[in-house]
Image (cartoon, chains in turn yellow, orange, purple, red):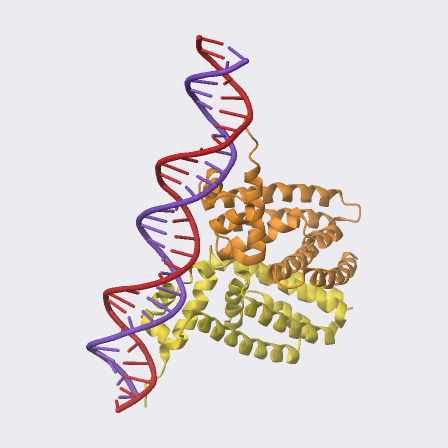
Length: 182
Length: 182
DNA sequence: ATAACTGTACCGTCTGGACGGTATAGTTTC
DNA sequence: GAAACTATACCGTCCAGACGGTACAGTTAT
């Protein structure tokens, strides 16, 4: 039996981390390989080019998002509250891949933008079932706002401090959602 | 009297437009110069390096944001409603410079991130005066969400169609704000 | 008034470095 | 023995920035 392709996931994780922390520009093939503890040749063995690496990251995002949407539908506290809570930056695998992908979308990567739009639509559909189409939009924009801020902060500064500041905000948002529901 | 530096503004406008439409990566000095109808040498006469060009763009953002915040304070419909309406992408000078700057923040440009944080804080302060600190956050996150989406869309696709779809959303958000105010 | 000069506003070309990708030869692990 | 690598050298392209030069508006000296 051949050995397991451990480097593949390491490369994808490294790519993701660099996108989050230093942006698309600095997430070069050399930098990704170095961070993954892999040679450049090894990286290119798994991903013939950068576009292939991006595709794999987007597939990871899609599968994690699908899980999230299932969890959202089944959430006991309701889809809207679940959505707001999960929009907070919590360093989960979905959060990470989402912010990483945002960096690509910002660089005008069309495929990434399409995938985003698809996931956002799914969220909106689930929210609409619970609070109606109008308020669903209000809730989704709040969640988008949380992502927007997570994205702006990126990897710089004290992550702990910012995370706690942000989680205080979630309380305010949940209160707002509660008001909107009635 | 010396000639007027007409190229300077043209360069800044071109830089802004390219950031919005094709992202940071593609907003190279050559591309900016070409779009501005200026030679590369001419561009570098006004802005000794790319960083200087970015600084000027951020100054433009700060001054436009200051005007916006004054208008927000004086808005007859209230600061919150004004804020939501103005968060919609309307191709105003402030909208443009804001989205353009977002592209830079995405690339982990620290100074840009700081400026953003400052402006966001000012918005929050004004909103808090009207609807209290808790609901102010809900409103600001909605506005951020609108910017997030404007940013994701960028210059691609049919701008007209997207603008009208988004403006329908603003109605929903204003209704939500109205509910939150009570 | 006009020639000589000065400073501003540009233009066009070049260079050094980085980046994406290729190629190839060897090494480890199952 | 074959898949999963490492290591390194290399190529073409693109980009930021440097540099030397040009055009012209305004100023000064005669």
